[in-house]
Image (cartoon, rainbow, N blue to C red; front, side, top):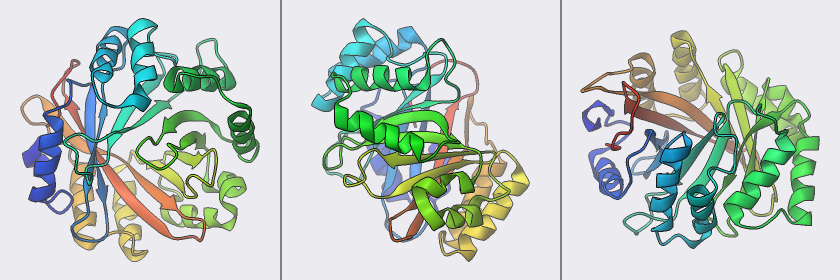
Length: 303
């Protein structure tokens, strides 16, 4: 897969760091990278989806239990003994590694994302179950109130995931909601939703917004955009460069990944989504998320 990754997005020295980290990972269902779009010499981070089904998730739990990441041990025990603390058919578990750290494989963030929340449980039941299975303890009153406030301020949003940013101070929890359009985020962003519209309006087939349940732990709000039409990726590349959110050579690299799935040796490499982060004062940044996996079902070794 390494030969399919554009050097403009993943310079050789950063790719070597990714390859070193990947050697310590288990086989997984899907893997990918997190690439900054401005600034030279920026880190390239790594994410994996270890498995989707119950039995492979149990094996992933055993691997996770053997790692020195104490905050993730409650989830490891839950996966090993009880299965995933989310509706298996609709939840995808992802670990994200910030590779600018010195450790060979640093403490990751953990996310569970949903394409749907059917299956006999409502969104609030899923959140409580997932929180307890991930943290090893029930939701506290302050956390419950903060989650309810975020849901109240985005009434058009539907549950899309819950994440725990363990490497960051305080290990903030982040609620993810799928929204129909940028305007529906005005309760979270105020007038900043216009920046989301300016970048993704008319292009994105799916928008997923994420905010820390306690804003003092992380003040920025992020918006993932999923685009499924080639012409939409082309227009997004133009907007990113025009708005100063992407270097021109990286915009061209994004288009190569988005337009060509690049099958090679039974595997594929493409562009999964892009994510815009907005700070409280309106400063914006964008990252791209290339993904790669096997052409046929089954586990594979990342990179």
